[in-house]
Image 1 (cartoon, rainbow, N blue to C red):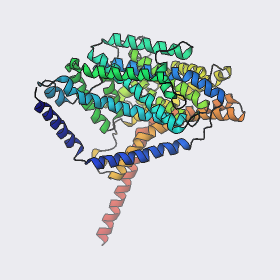
Image 2: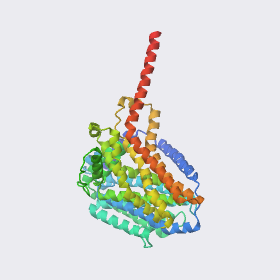
Image 3: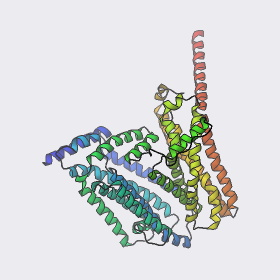
Length: 549
């Protein structure tokens, strides 16, 4: 194939990019990046400096240096597992449908045609992971020995290498046509080995990668060997791209197009469903355990049994993900107790994600508005009763959260009672934001599209911001009660009493959320009628004034 074919391909992609983004000059794009870096970085530094966390003691710093590499290595192993599974399912590249139909079937070298989208995918992931690592690194540098810039650079390096591990494993798993069960088994074996390294003194396979996260404090040149291996894996995957599966690219192209549209419309529920389809995660045809029908069939028992059957159809991968999220919440809550206040925001975010995962029965009702509107039952009452089974299902997950928190706190016996008291209420408060996000997407039967179409742009932007931040804020309020036992520990008060007060606060959050789900439609209808009456009264007054004139 001549060079003119590749120049034509570059020209077509450039033209499509211009049509999508508009004819933006390079200096304008650079100016936008400059503003984002200045204001975004300044905001992060200002928020970080406003948190009054003190530097840890020397003994705590030594303990952190001993255990942190294994914990950070566990995160890398989880990324490796995700990369292997994603690659075996057709990832990580997602082309547009036109590229799959025309470019991949044209007489153009497939590796050369895929080089640009593959490198863009890896580059974007590396940049995002490095940014997140730099943010976490500068937060760690405020409590640990070393400068903020050094910790930010070390965190960015760790994030970039972790992203390379994910990208390289995904590319190799795809191009080598690794079966899904082999990819899952290999990834789980590595994660299990690293988890044993976290719990014991056994060296783990990713300890050296975890050491990169501590380069803000100490530097070992041997830690760069895993970084070189990860980069070599990415290069090997790029060289083998001729073996990429067209069937997988075609399937992902259709799903990614829908995913981008759902993200644009801020339809979080659709985004989650499409992500599960990308990962080929489907519900079981039969539940793990089938419940016997109740002797007295009624509305409550029917909803209860249906909700549990929905939860019992979760695939094994999803159950493992729920356990991992619950354990991570426990670790972050324990880190908050030990003085790392930003960890509380991480637990709030994970609580929100846990709510989106475990509230599947409620999500199914929201996704089928024609069905629930045909029932002779109030929709708010129906959705509120669908919360019962998922909230009960959080009980075993709360045990995981409590155990993870106790282990993170060093297995101290004094931490058992506060962890046991706060674990379940914290999860309940954390999932409140997920409940609000799911119910908020339900069809509003009291409003019309014409009313929504004439919202001023300024008001629409403010409304969009509220829609994004309100569920996360509710989850943050439901999980921030861990600050009460921390304050009691600092002041020498009763930690158990403070934990009880915190548990009551989280229970109040979930109770208010459940009540809101039940009366949401009725409140909206009352507000809508009140506004309609006001507009009608104003119109009648204007008509009377015109007739009198």
